[in-house]
Amino acid sequence: MAGLPVETLRVWERRYQISDTRRSSHGQRLYSAEQVERLALLKQLVDQGHGIGLLAGLSRQQLQLMLEQHNPVQSSSSAAPIRVVVVGTSLPRRVVALGAEAIGLDLRVRCATLAELNEQEPDGDAEVLILEKAELDDSVLPRIDALRERIPAARLVLYRFSSSATIRALRSAGCVVARLPADLNELALLCRLAMRGQRLPLSHTPAAVPAPRYAEDSLAMLAQASGRVSCECPRHLAEVLLTVGSFERYSAQCAVRSPEDAELHATLERSAGQARALLEDALERLALAEGISVVTKGG
Image (cartoon, rainbow, N blue to C red):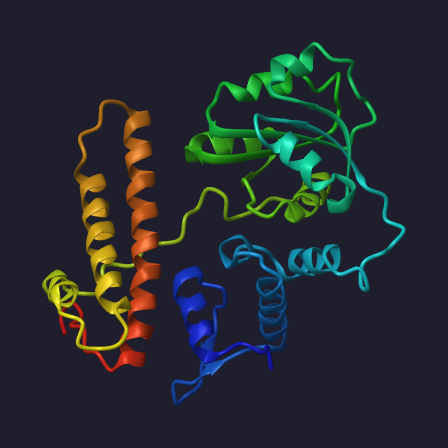
């Protein structure tokens, strides 16, 4: 009904907790009509190129808004571009290169830093102030607040790395905080969420990283196996998994010099674990296709 392969649905449910289904007396999953509709929206947006990691925490209404934003048949052709001020080292250039109007924005002011923005004429007509800061810290909050009288617009803060405490503080101050999107077509959606005062629940709550699935000695044997099959991918993938798993463990054990250093290494460990889980899914499918047996932990 949603157009999703069962395998994909199970991966999404395991990794992103996208649906909380009930079970029948025989153990079968029971989906409501609303859940099916939400899954269908997720499928359409993923097919358009959006990452499931961004979509998983959005409500059905937010997903519908996002779909309408990217579907000229469903969205209103008379909708005016969002008036924005963009501050950042690379985001303003990317918006100009892609074309602000093409992604539903009216770029009023662009600059590299908040200090530079302070020196420019204020734009009281702007609807959203977008701040791009790769490494986000608490120092940005008072500087954003200081601009409220000059630019009384909604606040959208985009980052790559940040502590949960900083994100909570910014949200308490009324900012919408999200990771920098790879696809700039998502900017207009994020701006609309900021204008409506809606929060993104996934920005600072990382999905749980599953424990390693495969025994290390089994991966090592596969990595050292000679090419007895036409496809060398299982051997290469086992080598990559060994390296990523090693880095994940190293990050967990790495000595830290400060709370900031501890946060960085925790992020590295989590990122490596997420990458390892994705590669394990790929190895599972590859092993089935090639008829290879890879021993799992406890197996």
